[in-house]
Image (cartoon, rainbow, N blue to C red):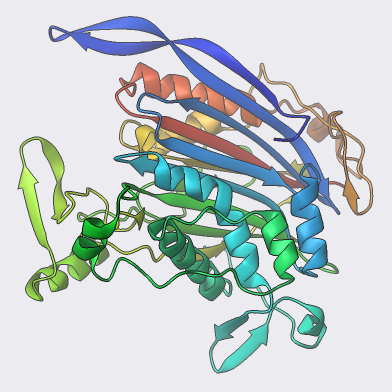
Length: 430
């Protein structure tokens, strides 16, 4: 954890039911301020608010400026575009084994797949990492809506290998492991999930449980003006983003992978017809459950003994950014990524209103910009040709927004599940 991270336990009020009557009770939540980090002309600010009832949620926030092993690993692997920052939430179920694995190993898995791997787009194959990359540039999509990403193949492979290594009870890879391999892909033992019953019978300590995974990676490319955000999602954790104007206008980027989702329902119905799975609905649960396993989500990492129709394949999209200066106003794009402990209780619109950066009572943290990778505990100042109204505008910080979102979730009775909320701002240092 970076030295600049501020972590504290806070007491908050939450609604609970006792004999069909609602009452308020005081609970403990955790608020983590990851501060600001700068890579080139890009500034990333992040914070997280968590309430862990079952203790199965995990999250990871990491930046190039704050984690030396993360930075050194990418330098040794000659990574360009660089992964400037990573934010991920992992909603574990049955146990915290899979979510713990992913919170530690997902970033090394992604970097391993990006190193020296090829990305298919149309009829062309482009090498997107390593010394040959200069002769084969990566072209990110630039239209206004999230699009399927050129990064799809390596991210899918990373999720698949995380799934397989977890199934084989292997430790999550580290940045040091990756540096020692020098670009050689991380090894994965033969998949055990092909015959789960036999595997369970021979396994003295079964690797139980699974996890959702919703991650965003900020990539910076030397010579390019804008960074690129790549979002990969498996399960029903969710990511929303605003229009960089500081208002409450947010749009959902990810898809909830549940049996009620039309595309997932079609895929599962076909699996039922093949005799691979069954779907059951009960009064206890609002959505159908997938058997074997009884899962409410149709995509997870782990869940070795569940139906093989439950897959780990993520949906991967690029999110175009609208950051910088427009009409004399500074534009910062905000992202909210959270587990279903939030989304099952609070609608996107209400979360967007709580996450809005415009606030009369908010404060702004800033520091001076510099070239290349910088490290600082002081606030960031964005300099340049900005109007006085932009300089004086008040903005809620990610920490303030994360805490506000958590409170409205608890006010709505959301203390019956783990809740993990990460708020991320991406802007430009001028």
